Amino acid sequence: MCGTCGCGDAAGPRIAVPHDHDAHDHPHPHDHLSPGGGTTITLEQKVLAKNDALAERNRNHLADHRIVAVNLMSSPGAGKTTLLERTIRDTAGRRAVSVIEGDQETLLDADRIRRTGCPVVQVNTGAGCHLDAAMTYRALTALAPPDRSLVFIENVGNLVCPALFDLGESAKVVIISVTEGTDKPCKYPHMFAVADLVVVNKVDLLPYVDFDLESCQAHVKAVNPGAGLIALSATTGDNVSSWYDWLAARG
Image (tube, rainbow, N blue to C red; front, side):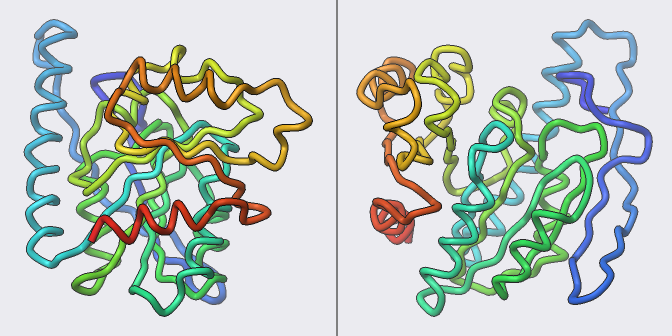
C-alpha cells in the first residue's frame, strides 16, 4: 500500500507485455513498508526516501545507456495516449521508442500503443494511483529498451500523487486539455511545480470551450517559472512539431 496516500491493495502491481493475441498479466511480489508505529509524516518520509533511492538507481541505469525517459502525467482523458500514438507514428525511424503504460486495470492503452508497432509494457497498479520507482525498474527490466533510445512512461491518470514519486526519469511532462479549465495549475500546484514542460492539448476545441491560454500560461509561470509550455492538438496535429523539437533537444 502507498504509505503517502493510502492507495494500493494486497495483490500489488502487475507488469505485462501485450502480445498480438491474448495478453496475460504476470503477478509480481510488491514491496510493502510496515508503518512500525511511527507518525504519518515519518512514514511518508520513509516511503519517499526509499523511492528516491530506487529512482536514483533507475536514473544511473538510464544515463549509463544514454536512454531518455519522459514521465507523462495528467488527469484521465487529457490525451496522453493519443499524443503518444501520434508521436510514435510521426517520428518513426528517427529514434528507437518504447513505452511503459501505467493504469489501475486493463491493457487497453498498452494495446493501442502496441498497434503502432512500438514495444510496450503495461503496469497495472490495482488500487494504486501512481507509478513508483520500483514499478518503473521492473517495467524497464521487462521492456529492455536499447541504448540511446527514448522511453515514454505514461503515468496513472492523476494530478496529485504522481508528482511526489521520482521515477528516475529524464524529464517530467504534465498534459492538460482545454476542456479541463484554465485554473488547473492553481488547483494542483505541486504537479505543475515539478514539470519541465506543460503541454496544453486539444487546442482545436478552443472555439467551443471557456479556456484562456494566456491566463493558463500565467498560472503555470506563477507556480513554476522554469516550466516550458506548448499548446497543440494531438488529434489534428496542430503545433505537434514544437513537441517533437522539445523531445529532440532532450538528447
